[in-house]
Amino acid sequence: MSGTERETRFVHAASDPRRQGGYVNPPVHRASTVLYESTAAMDASQADPLKRRMPVYGRFGTPTARAFEEAVAELEDGYAAVATCSGLSAITTAVLAYVRSGDHLLVTDSAYLPTRKFCDSLAALGVRTEYYDPRTDGAGIAALIRPETRLLLLESPGSTTFEVQDVPAITAVCRARGVVTVADNTWATPAFCRPLALGADVVVHSATKYLTGHADSILGVIVGTADTFPVVRAAAIRLGQCAGADELYLGVRGVRTLHVRMAWHQIQAMEMARWLGKQEGVAAVLHPALPEDPGHALWQRDFTGAAGPFGVELERGFTKADVDALLDRLRVFGLGHSYGGYESLIVPADPVSHRLPGTWHDRGPLLRVHVGFEGLDDLKEDLTNGLLALTGH
Ligand SMILES: *Cc1c(COP(=O)(O)O)cnc(C)c1O
Image (tube, rainbow, N blue to C red; front, top):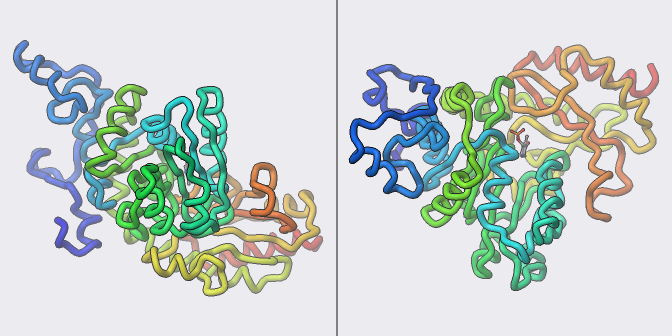
């Protein structure tokens, strides 16, 4: 459907009701064993090393998995996708597909913290991870690449601090030097950014967030190009990666309404970000769609919209007890991890414990806000009460 309008693609990507008895949605295949009609059919099923053409065994994917994978691959303008049990496992699988002992790995300093912990753990396998400032330009990345640099992992905007990276410049430098680039596109989703079109080799998602979109599943997906997909798929097979039937179903169901949900998240979050920027006690709002944000120009160039989560930096000097008073006063915003569901969430997100010196210093306490679909007046009233608690009222 490459010539089709994008909105139409979200609704119909890779959907073929004729394959499923005419029903609009794919069935939930709960499956391990596949029965063969003959030994010849069994032998034929073994011929495909990537185990995609014929059903072989549940771990290699079911029709429910294919429905989700094919839809996401099409929306990301990728060649094919492989579903995994979580967003983190999508990242670990994509990285393990490429790195070998002795390799050097470049990772954005703004990466999701568990991504960072995984990359650090690779030291035990002889892989050295170096973190780079997410504001580094193409020339800066070129200076960091060594003969043994194998892979660069980027996330734009970054988790908790929301720096936008110059993805086309970074991927161009990496491609010229033979370094594979993996982009975590969880924040933007294919509704607002397609990193493969910006030069990335692999895209990973925590489908737990917007793709499923209702805080009811843990799911990951990796999208590759014709060059990278076979490498990633082979790694997923070796590592035993697969996703549960219900999660896959919720993933494909979520994708159908993704562009509508994202459009509304964008409107709600923009209004809350602008409003929060004017409130007492707030030092800065980290949201790349705000014109004053340092990442605004890159965001405007490379993205077609802005998702729900953004950062709120409070004035310096507030203590943990002050911030806790704010959070404990809230009644509409939920205090909880993750994002991408229909409900608004807030969490403390201070990156000071793990960031490179210089990328986040002398700043006030940081919160991450995810704006859901509640009424804006209720959300503002809730935060007004929280900010009063912050300042001791
Ligand atoms: C949540 C998240 C992940 C991890 O996803 P899970 O599905 O929770 O494993 C990875 N990257 C980003 C940017 C995330 O927000």
